[in-house]
Image (cartoon, rainbow, N blue to C red; front, side, top):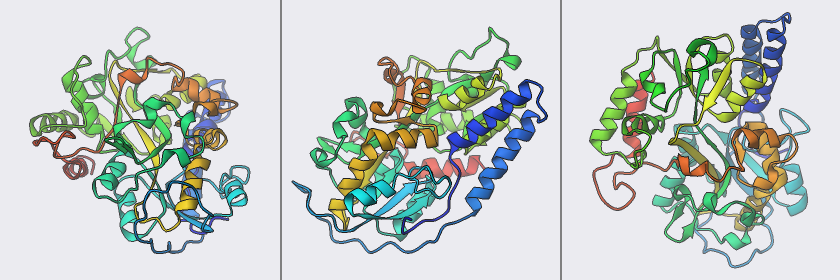
Length: 414
């Protein structure tokens, strides 16, 4: 078993699939109501999350090492900081384990720590030393800016070239001609809507429906949702980057979010929140992920999703820290998690799209279809997240930095 483990939550895709099966039964007149099925799925999630595995303290990091030109012998250990659900060792389901094969094939023992994205991930980074980190865009940008991420010798990362160039070159984890992250999972937002409430011919026109239409509406509980409000203000044909906001645009986006009261607006953290909202018909609209919409539709719920002409998305990447003590094992880890086999498991476990399209087979094919992985025209409609910075990303001044995004979001979502 992995050496360092902290907490465990059931995978969103598994919980959604369980809920979908129950919803289908309820729709056919089964003994359980949709509300009961979703509530039981959520209860199982809480029960699994409450059972923590043994924990420990990561080893101290070594001094920063130069970018290697070749892989050497593995050091025997790799300290991994992962977002929940991004690495599995069989603790929830014995058949879902993509650590054992890595340890067996490389001789590198994984010492694993989990953290929630956002401020809890920042806290974990401040308190421990790690060789590799699964970083969302806002974390990746900070690690690069602070010199705490190592530029990668991508030729040493197995399967790296299997990942499409448009993902490999996203600005969230690149700087100049240097690459700091290997894409792992990605997603984007749709406007999910209940046809029974809006009418079959009343699909939302654009992303502005999430902020202007009558509620109840559910939004993602994340400071970067402010960017979606900025897109709504700019209009679908706007070309401004919603993650680089001047004070005026930022305040206007926050004001748009504040315009709706608690009776019309709610926030989701877990994918099951969206299912629980739509299943009994409580929601009209939601800032939803394609897989969430797909699960509900396959359960015969009257829920569909519209991909706006411009919408937001994100990609999470694996990064090696500048002070990594176990560089050779770290590079082997990056190659392992870039493989089609691991990415197939990760996508099926989380309900997110795999960075390596070779993973789009078997049960993951449905997820890739939900995200339209094979559609070359889709990515031009997605503005992928970067960490908001005061220099506007181009060395100028006048933009609102990420710390202010976090502060205002805490005031908004109490």
